[in-house]
Image (cartoon, rainbow, N blue to C red; front, side, top):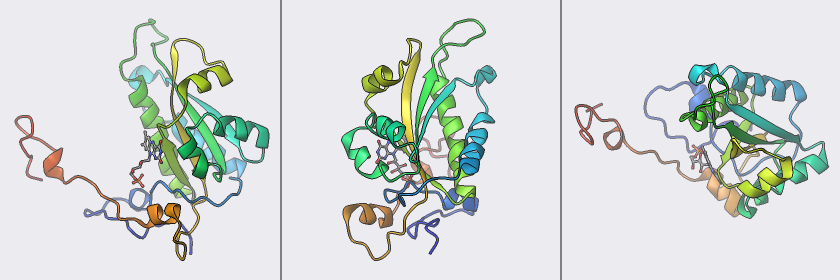
Length: 202
Ligand SMILES: Cc1cc2nc3c(=O)[nH]c(=O)nc-3n(C[C@H](O)[C@H](O)[C@H](O)COP(=O)(O)O)c2cc1C
């Protein structure tokens, strides 16, 4: 089986396959990602929209074939994330530049734009048969210290990128998570019209 479809996907509307196939795996095959595929994913991130085209994202990348660099980035994750992210092909630390270069004023949407770039990367990864699992669970001060991230920049997330492993036939915790039912809020809880919390009736 190609592990690119989470059997528990639950999309109701006919959303694009690239979106419905995407999930955040806990099980990765411990193998490298081809450098061309990694470059394509990063290029997808590069072409994201951003406020004033600031492109406030900075990515620190470590591939598993560079075991020292990979271990260094893995060590910047909280332990719970290290336990599964260690099998990813690539680890990426995302960092936001907090001010606009054009006038040095605060960029209120810098982290939003990190999300835009990350989403592009994730969709491109899915198109290439890869999966990504984003993480808020990083040690921000360790990231800052390890990589010499200066003031004016904040570590935001880490992304584990690689080949999802098939959870079928396994009953460990990680496999259970990957096979568990995926939940989303109904429209009524978050799509409003007219006033706050008034359902748009979609
Ligand atoms: C910004 C962000 C931070 C996340 N942080 C973590 C994390 O630290 N650890 C983890 O296991 N999953 C993390 N996730 C994964 C979410 O738990 C997951 O996306 C969510 O449960 C929905 O599941 P799905 O991505 O498979 O649809 C994060 C996802 C995002 C987008």
